[in-house]
Amino acid sequence: MRMRKILSKRCFWDVDIESLDIRKDKSFIISRTLEHGTMQDIIALKSMYPIKEISEVVKNSRNISRSTAVFWANILDIPLEEVRACSKLQRYRQIP
Image 1 (cartoon, rainbow, N blue to C red):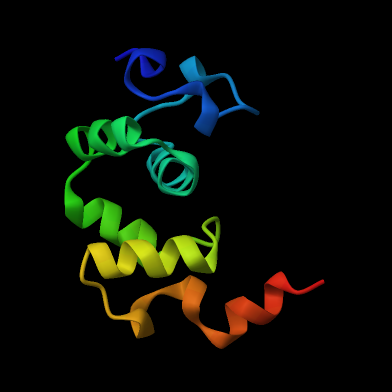
Image 2: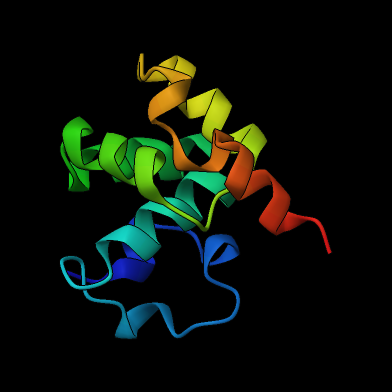
């Protein structure tokens, strides 16, 4: 599957989008798309992965911002206590 035709380059400015593997790079693809994607990218993401897999990335990813995590937790009906980016420990790690 050609990733360039599915997702926009704006999410993957620093990698060769064609080198991404839809299974092996699942967490990276989902987190980048949730953080930087357009509405079209989100629609494409939902056709590539089940909502359960997207929800798991929202819960466990260290690569999404707190605001993105809160937004998607609300959309996907995930309790904030289950979202890693919303934990106190994660917030302190982001402060230099």
